[in-house]
Amino acid sequence: MEHIDNIVFGDNQFFGINHMSQEKAQQLAEQFFDIKNIFKVYQYVFDAGVNAVMLNSNDRAKEICEHFRLNSSSYPSLNWYPSIPYPHKYANLVAEKGIFPAINEVLFKDNSARKVMGMITKGSTAVLTKDAIKLMQLLIDVEMKMFIGLDIKVVFLQNIITDLILGYDQRDIFYEYCEYIRKKYKALPGLITQNMPFLKKKFQEWGIKGVVICSSYNKIGYLMSPDRDSYILATENNNPSDYQLMAMSTLASGAIPAKEAYEFINQQKLQSVVFGASSKKNIDETVGLIKI
Amino acid sequence: MLKIGIVGAGRMGITHYSIINSHPDITVSSVADPSGLILSMMKKYLSIKTYKNYQDLIKNEKPDALLVCTPPNLHFDILQKAAENNSHVFVEKPYTTDCQQSHELSRIFTSKGLVNQVGYVNRFNDVFSEVRRLVAESVIGDIIRFKSEMYSCTVVKPDEGEGWRGSRESGGGAVYEMASHAIDLVNYIVGKPDKVIGSSLNSIHSKKVEDAVSSTFVYRNGCSGTIYINWSDESYRKPTNKIELFGSKGKILADQHSYKIFCNDANQQYDYRQGWNTRFITDVFKNVPFYVRGNEFTNQLYHFVDCIQKPGLKNICSFSDGADAQDVMDKIFNDFAINGKA
Image 1 (cartoon, each protein chain N blue to C red):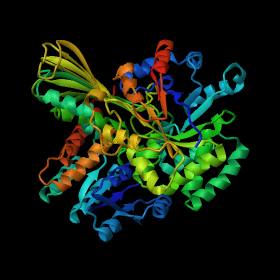
Image 2: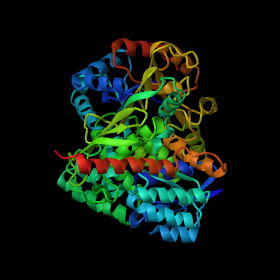
Image 3: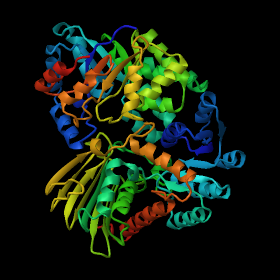
Image 4: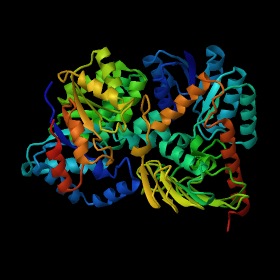
């Protein structure tokens, strides 16, 4: 398996996401309302020597991708780590319309008429033959559209979807997801999960390898189901040529001071850390602290 | 192993299936839903029995327990049948659309010794359950005023009112679908109000139902408080729940992620200084065995299983609690009908 970057810059701060404080989340949303402020932060990141970017496929990400595609000569060569889908879009639609009308709306909303005709044919076949795999592939293509033309290293499935499918114990869906990402996008399949030890055990049983697993990983065990010790054990016993492990939420939304947080992280057998920050000082400090 | 049937495979049914399926003592054996498409997909990928209607599911499967996630106006009939079959029931909120029915079901299930639970998930949130404990232990003294608010960007386009969400009779509208959470949180933390006044309902995008609601709750002991819920507020990316409690010894501001407590005097037992103290979810969380959508969703279903396995364990959100929320919602509708128009 190709090695992933050991430091990846995340995107939560740009989209008003903070798991600990809604007030902080609102404040960030305001700061990054002007997209220029987002590009300014990316520049700090590149200046700190990090050339890997994780980005969720929400509406604002489209503008960000467009900018980097059009101005690629002004930037170092970048590795992209898209995460799909943008879960809230689906959550509201599914609640409002039911699952299949929601899928239809997503599939057909942002596409030109000619493409839609093609997709309807492919899509209706998928629905009529109850082919969840084909449906999934269509949805992946819709979400991935904005990243086309960028250098894609890993495509991550968001944890809400990963963990839902994991609960259903569906080997084939995961297997086909991984195959599709490898073949169509020439990228490594990635899964974000809040149940890393369980997911890794299942993937081993199912014989699905060559996958990047991204999960919360922090000293206080926040968002680490079932518990922190199971994560440490699963990491110690991991063979990185089968599964590369990436840590997120390393500061537990700010509950752990950076120095203390990375002293813990640096002792773990992890292949990568994804972190978010919005000031030059915090970016430089974090990059200096991560030693994996 | 407990055999579980799921009635209704919409968004909540699909989520609950995934969570409860992770429980080592549970087998999901069957699903009922009128959508042929959902059923055939489920049948193809999951080794379960599928039914077009709940009657056949109950008759043929005789499940130990049911998760009922259908539109609310169908709950009464389904729950009655479930009780006849002696199935324990977890039902999504709001639990019925009729006070009498909700009390009747509560009586039936209690008298038969069947576990009965309603999906007011905030009761299982780590922050809100801690806040409730603080209030119960009188850390901020007697509650004098409160505010319970919820915001989301759920309905932000004109809605013609098709489907069950479009009409109050079938359980749609911001009161049933969203305010019910804020009301239940008040019932859980402060207690059920004795009187409801000053209710107003606004339609913003929905044709036949309300998108925003506010009301004032009054208590015999002199306490009073307000609720305000708006699900057409585009400034909120995610559903947000806030509660503010003012007591004789201090004050608490809480949402799903953190709480701030102002203590008039220091409290050694809880390690609070005099003045403001902040606690984040990272200070109070307890990990769950399997996470899909927030700890509270796992906590509530695992608690349901616990109650089945340990007879005598008191349910944190029983049908009786669901009936209490229904009583308050009925009072809001009545108050608005009588006093709500200018």
